Length: 471
Image (tube, rainbow, N blue to C red; front, side):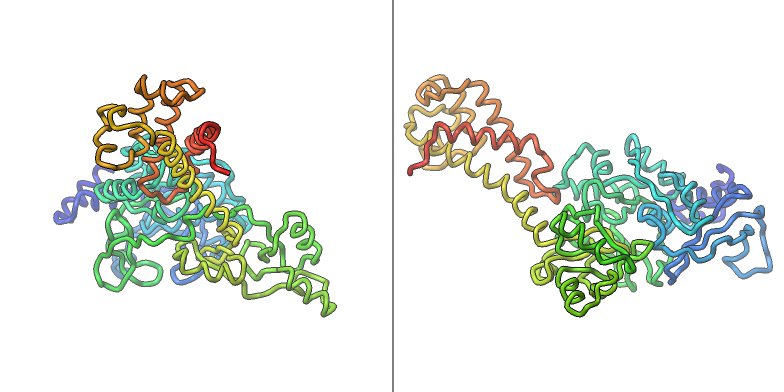
């Protein structure tokens, strides 16, 4: 492979080292594939991929048009596999803009073999091993063309566990420095959603499936457009930022209506998506539809009660632009580009998310207010010197400053709380650290740190025992 790199450098002296390395790895993959290997080719402008078996060695055809001279023969055993039949993780890895990539993880070889034999993807239920460090991520992208990992594992390479604005900006800059492209952007979905990392050199100047060219915003975010130049990543809150219900109960079009009624009663569902064999959305069945079918004496199959035009959304859509639809219809079915069902978002889900995101802030506010009320009788002279100026100037203590008051022996004695002093100080530190972390608003809900949230509840419970509310 080193010789290929030397030849490319000599032939294209003006190209960057990154571009030469990318071309080198792609050419090596093309040359080193063995006869009998399976080849997958996404078809441009068509919702299918072609799967074939390599039957010939490398050939150079000097009479062919430029771009078609370097060839290997392929027997296309299944030329039109529906993209919807392929699992989203495998489909995303096939969607790399690099001309030649290796599908090597998440049982890709066995799954492509099954697609070639049956047209169906058996899927993969296991986890995915993250790269050991940032250098390993870069190396994997260079060698395989792409690397899949979760958003959690990506930011974990830099030592982070939540996606605050500062963290997102930092990782964006680090990715841009290494010329890495991430799709979808690691801030758009959930922490444990898969993302695909590829090299910007692999896609630079190539045409996307819709014929547009590719430019880049900060952090390697890709913008497909018609030459207006690079633009910054959109920071709008996305539907995918909410933890959607992923294990969606679905029914088939020709199934008996009872197959929908039973789970709807059992789990208090108000609707069920109707899908085909590849999980492509065909409609939705609701209690209203079931009632209409009953009144019209059409109670045979799901099709008799189905509404063929359900409210749908993509994970990348702006959340607040679709809240009105959720309020009016009660739900959105979340689909991907192939219209396969990815999840469901209901009005009840939104209410639950509101509680999970607001509760930590209300608990912290109540802890702070109760501490303020229980310590307001201290005079400025009694308060420790570290925070005395705050009280003297008529200002309130911050949550973190109460540690100085509670750590003072005289102040603690005057409080006369029935708790251990060091225990309360330890609890206050945990809650203060939690509050400081939440001060940097993050994509991920505060409840991600469940232990700190529980500690906040427990401290508040202790304070309520000694700080009685007036009746």
